[in-house]
Image (cartoon, rainbow, N blue to C red):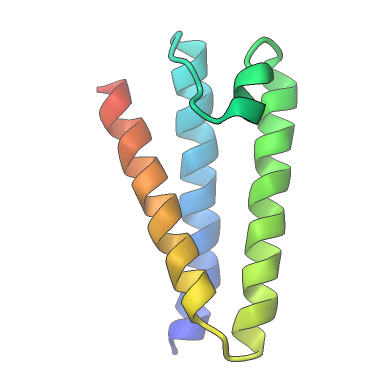
Length: 92
């Protein structure tokens, strides 16, 4: 049951993280991640790199969830949720 919920939840939280980070960078906020900070000048590259990183994390989690290893996916949900909350509070 929880396995069916984890992957859509990860996808939704990942999408929210990408969108809030993009909006924040466009509003003039600085990205704290060193790699993404270097890409702030080029919004398209920033979006592509962030999307690629999220896809790799979600695919890795999906592989582990199929093998009944749920803890890494739960940790990733928590990290995505914290990042989303932080981004949203920054944008207020």
